[in-house]
Structures are given as structure tokens and as C-alpha cells.
Amino acid sequence: MKLYDLPASPNTRRVRIFIAEKNLEIEMIPIDMMSGENKTEEYLAKNPLGRMPLLELDGGTCIAESIAICRYLENEFPDPPLFGTTSLEKAMIEMWQRRMEFQFLNPLIDIFRNTHEMWKDRIVQIPQVAEIASEGVKEQMVWLNQELEGKEYIAGGGYSVADITAQCAFVMGKAAVGIRIPEDLSNLDAWWSRVTSRPTARA
Ligand SMILES: N[C@@H](CCC(=O)N[C@@H](CS)C(=O)NCC(=O)O)C(=O)O
Image (cartoon, rainbow, N blue to C red; front, side):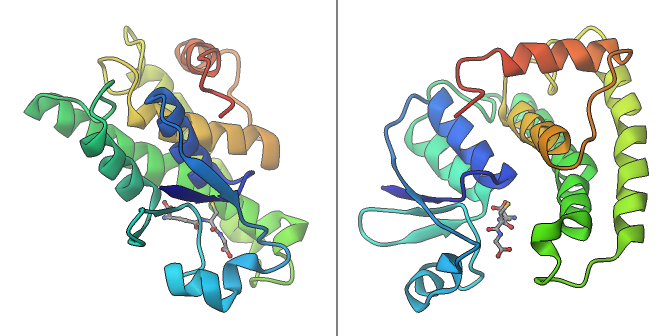
């Protein structure tokens, strides 16, 4: 198996952390988006959307979409479980994973794409999109802080893919768009320390 990787991207980071949590050895192939490596005929034949991450299986089948890749790996390598084991755990983790994607990861990516220099000549940037997303993310941090009361991890049980999505979103917030977790959101801040001190956090 090979993972086509874009080193600074939050989506590929969540797959890399997932792989590290499972203690798997998977060859990583860095793709240079700035020089257009993801738009070559060869890469588009693997993923016509030209996006990373992309997992290529030994037989040549390609799986795109971070969560689809993680689900495949979870089924192939169930330990430690990161999507839950009981029906209830699976549902709760799915719910929280989606919330973390919709409330944090996607809006933070929108802010980055609509403000950062590197996207200037690639898309039509709309500053208001970034402003609205930024307000939303700040409000949702207050909500998540309340939801974390009495919990160590986001879905209520152990560390899961929901935490991975959230931590990658906040890494992006901090590093790329200057939105940090306020220290007075103590539950969220404690969760952040907990997840970023895991040995896999810098995968
Ligand atoms: N929903 C996809 C998103 C993949 C995606 O948009 N990846 C970005 C990096 S975070 C990318 O490859 N961008 C390249 C481009 O837009 O040209 C996933 O979860 O994997």
C-alpha cells in the first residue's frame, strides 16, 4: 500500500495520525501541489479530482477521501479501534466525527482558501466567506468546550477518529489562519493538551 500525501494538509494529516495510531508501516509518497504534481495525467488517472490523501492498494485500486481510507484501514487492522466497536459507540463516533468535520475542519479550510496568498491565483477568494466561517468557528469552540465537560475525548469514550479530525482542524487553525483555542475554554484547552501530547500527534 502507498499513501499519496500532501505534507502540510489537514486531511492527509488525519490519515497519517490514524496510520500512526494503528502502528502501521505504509509508504508515503509526497505530492507537490505547488508544482502541479496532483494535476499530472498519471495522478489524475488515480484520482480524477486531483486531491490528497489517496491510498493505493497493492493491486492498484485507489481509495480517496480521508474517512474512506481510515475506514478501510480500520476494517483491515481493527486494533486499536478508532471508530468504536459497539453499535452505540460507532454511532456516537460517527456523529462526532461529522460534527468536527462540518463545524471546524471544513470552515477552517474555507478560511485558509479564501485568505491565503497561496490560493490567490488558484480560486476566486471571497473574504466575507472567511469572515463568516471565522465567526462560526469561534462560536462553535464555546459549544465544544461545554460538550467536553466531564469528558476526556470528544465522542465520550476513548480517543477516536473524531478527536483526530478535530485536532487536525485546530492544528490548521493555529498554524495557517491564526485561530487558536482560547485558554479560558478550559475543557477544550485540556483536551487539546491531551491529544497533542500523544506520540502520534506529529505524524
Ligand atoms: N474530502 C477530501 C478532501 C481532500 C482535499 O481537498 N485535499 C486537499 C488537501 S487538504 C487537496 O488535495 N487539495 C489539492 C487541490 O485542491 O488542488 C478528504 O477528506 O480527503
